[in-house]
Length: 307
Length: 297
Image (tube, rainbow over all chains, first blue to last red; front, side, top):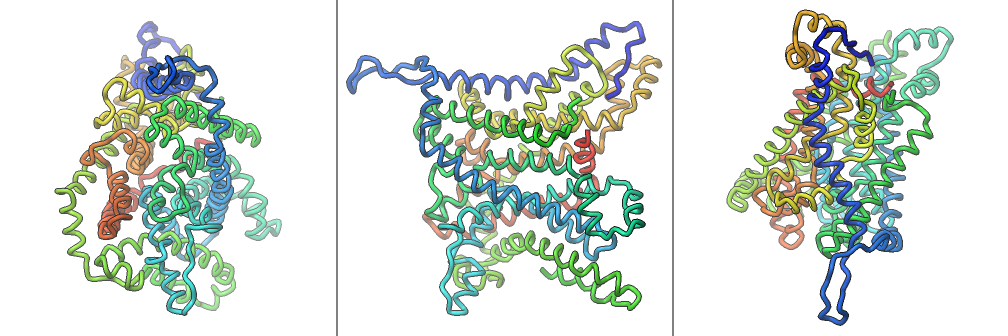
């Protein structure tokens, strides 16, 4: 990054200027990121203790050390939530990225018919909020309104339930895939367009076909963009909340604590155990950070432009 | 669905013998892309068709057959809860419109400072922002709520609006864009001419950064419009809900009263259409290359 060097006599005011530009963002960062994190950490070490004994003891908020963290890590429901999240993520992330990369590569082929239309159509679900997407798919899954089941009934076959049993995870993941493919496709596609054409000309002269070019040149060159989209898909996975919550009224298979955030919400607002919810939030946030850093380290690319 | 067939037609029509060998290689890519388009459009087509069905038709007629209840559904939607739906639309517009606008300005200022000045603590600020990118808002929603209720703001419009004004990702993008679109020489020349920092920013940097700002605005608009957990946690008054939370409450009440299902469906259809239109119209102003260009480092 080029920097303006100090030459004129008005040094003092210049020295102040960048801080002035950063001030609004800095204040908001403190108020809505740093301080809430600090407050959550503080709360996570506090808890209600009953003093005086018996059913009429007085509840007091005191320092309880790591008790909430122990409770978080030994809570089978919270851990099961992470297990479900893992299954969901193993389906959603690779399929989203795989489809996005496939579509981006196809769009980048020379002279493909209908490319513009397809690009726009595949991008449209990005504009649909997750909750509304879950509502749409929920109705397409619901046995009484599902088009698949309508056809099956017409053919005299048994209807299938798609938000139950083994189909539950793919069905929920499908919603994230549907909303996510287009945005990732656009990022990968623009990154492909940024590769200079001469690179391909040389390969074509050497007799490479489109498949070889895609596999040997394009995919390696969009590597950094793939890492970034993968990172956001992963972060998105850890934050899943709205989709299963919206589907919940339509099926019996999604519990109140199906994913970690749902469990945190229940602890905080249904059970009023703010300390436990704070500890679980800190665990989830740290987990997100660790996963992101590990991914960036593993890929060893300066994907976020850290100077 | 009809659009798919119309746009697919030129492929078969262009069956000139000369183009045949080149075309053969393109049938499969086009087919795969059209399947992708179909997959993405079917749920949207479904909600538009389903919003024309009356309650009884919803569960009895074929899913993709249009019904006869459109007018009645629209009337019911507008009448629901004394015009609550219109209120939800306005709330969403307020949160997303004002939030994205202010966030874009704040991020542009911060990104400009990070890209164009060297000052003590710059590296620290940058790492703080990067940490914020890797740790996005949703995990913070509950601590934010606790803090908001401490200071008595929970349940107000501010409780949803204020947290959406800060987006580390937007600042990161603004920094990338300021770095690539505002030449340092121009800033230096203006400075020699006697312009101060505020004037350099408003008169020189800001106009050069407009394409980047449009992108940041759209990304932030969509992310606030789509947000569910933050308003769901913060707000308790149904009239202050944005569309996402409003439609969710309609749907969860609907599992007890199926008559609300058709309301939720037409509500969803009406909610999607403006955003899809905005997306299509503003598509060419998007500078997504900023996203993929910035991450090459």
